[in-house]
Length: 110
Length: 120
Image (tube, rainbow over all chains, first blue to last red):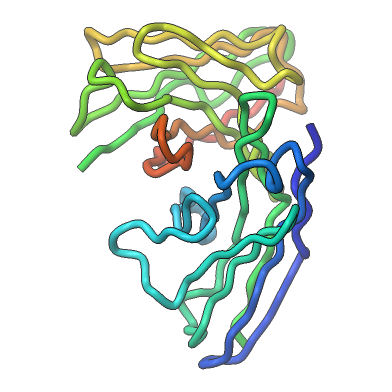
């Protein structure tokens, strides 16, 4: 299956909000509420930030939120902080009973 | 707190078999309720799900890798393993083991990752 489509990069200033999109198909993003988002700092393992489209794991800041419309999911980070600068990946469960990831988005905090 | 730790050779020769083990601590693979996956990340690239195993031994693999991948579990050691055969330079990547819930399907715990280089 093809990877989910994310913008290669986004940027924002401290305090601002940014949104990262993740586009798939009706066989993955659009077909299931099993979209998750991961934050990855350089040299580190990915960290779960959002699961089941819009749920935050315990310990994740409420500045992170997720949503979905049709075949596109979105991650919004409000009140940008320097520590948010990282790569972000979306993932979805698929109709083939496996997982597909997005290509990743590099977030730069200006 | 669940922890996962990958181990195995960092260098594998082309055409040989890549073998990695993930040791789980802070929780039992046998307790059920979770899939235990291998995921890789090529240098500077995105993530690719390789496959998972359930404590019962049932497996599911990425169709693009299915013919080359074997994942097994040793519940007595609380470990699961990956074998990837006939490797090429294209299999050079950081390999992660991770846990996902059978309910939410998200990967909530990850190992730190281990770089495997395929080179003669």
